[in-house]
Image 1 (cartoon, rainbow, N blue to C red):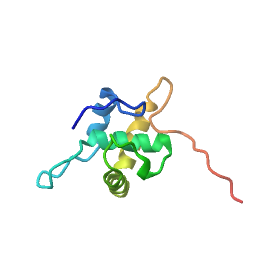
Image 2 (cartoon, one colour):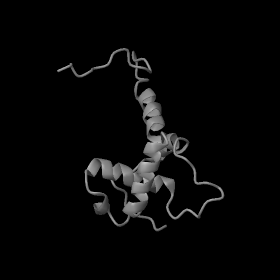
Image 3 (cartoon, rainbow, N blue to C red):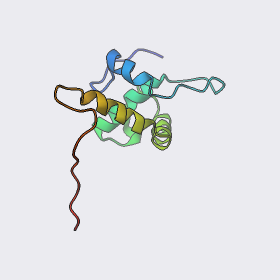
Image 4 (cartoon, rainbow, N blue to C red):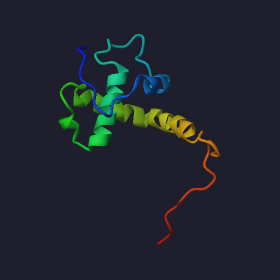
Length: 110
């Protein structure tokens, strides 16, 4: 794949080292990989931050049908939940914070 200019939403090398173990690897006996997993995640981060339509993803990111496929697949197989849980624990490792929150806000009954 050609190198491209980075978007502000792209993962840094450090961020990718944290996430790479949480993103499912390609199946060893599956079809050849056209786009690295990191680029798929970068496209998803761009989509999330830009709030654009799937079809409006920039052309130097993987094509939107591929990005959307991985979004749905990882949503349905629990990958996004695992990533969220792992990152929440890392964010909460600041001084005087527990890994799990002690209280939660809920919407009042109407």
